[in-house]
Length: 268
Image: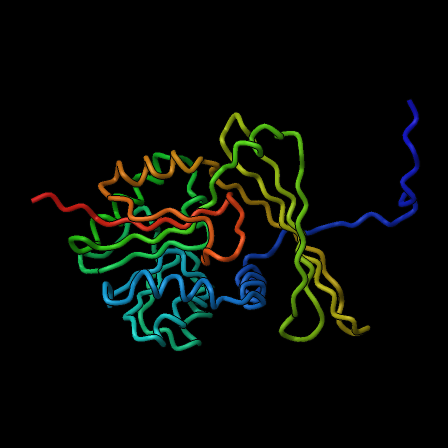
């Protein structure tokens, strides 16, 4: 059986190098900076105001949320396993920083809220590791302290289309001029309950003296349903206060995004 010609047979094939670790935090920072964070920031402020002054952000990266929350008056501690990201964050006058693994927090009890944004919990390998992290969060929170988590959750119709590959792309500015084109190819692995991502970064400088680059980064997220996330959080000792799909009720949101707020249950 002959396939119909696509018209792109003569196009040059693109090659991608693995994304260097020294560049990863810069590219992700630029991408995050290209989005309007006001709805996200307002959502967290609404959850935290009058209930929290001492806040810990796990997986803070280059700290766009942490620094903004700090300017709003919260005593924020930014924690990440990536030292390069924290060095970048220190230049932005973030006062409290810590490099550590979120499954083994080197803090004592004392935080009134813990924020885990941008699918950070999904980066852990399996539910056992997620539960270990949540137990650590429970330990460092004061009684009735809050957990705020931004999670990816698996939609039933996505699971039933495992052979489909979804391509998404986003274009944003390079800090030294030019554009960065980010392409993300998503594919579900039902057997291992993983969402596999291939992220491609095409750096286009539009100047002859500055070369273009193509990089790729492979990422795998644990793929759990809304019900499985709730069960994990409750098994770690939390009481669920809310589960919503968007930062704003008036704005349509993907059901694969889950914003969860839970309170530490402290038995008397």
